[in-house]
Length: 175
Image (cartoon, rainbow, N blue to C red; front, side, top):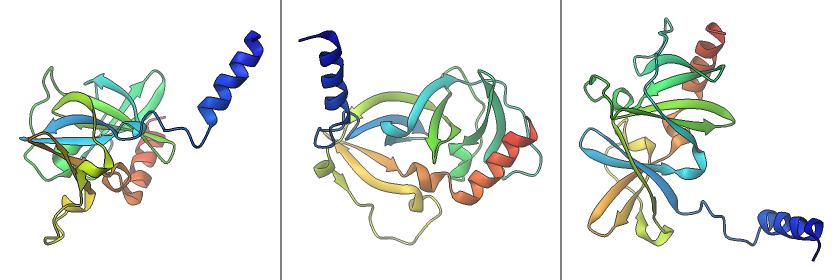
């Protein structure tokens, strides 16, 4: 087989829609407070340490500001504050998980990044139907890994449309 044919075959395999997505059922897990959370790895662009965050006026309290990531201005949300938890000093374990929401990069500050885990769909349960708290509406499901439960977040709901508008204006403000 020629190299060109091999490459085309690889591309066909890569784009084959019947092919299992290699990112399916994979979640990046992290802690915020005492709980373990997970987000679909397909949303994650990269994980970086805490950088200097430039404050932007007139933003919700959980929007910490913007960072300059290799020349691109990215808005940053503190997940702890988004969940109405007490603010905590950032330390050497604090990370920013850069996610892409509707093709817009957003940094999510979390207490500690843990690992990438496989959680098959049959190991995910819907969250219990209790009063709709502000935090609960971001929950996509509860993933079971052995005896542990990871709270799986819906990144698109976590970074709501009105927040996106505020964050995009924050990024534009500093451009």
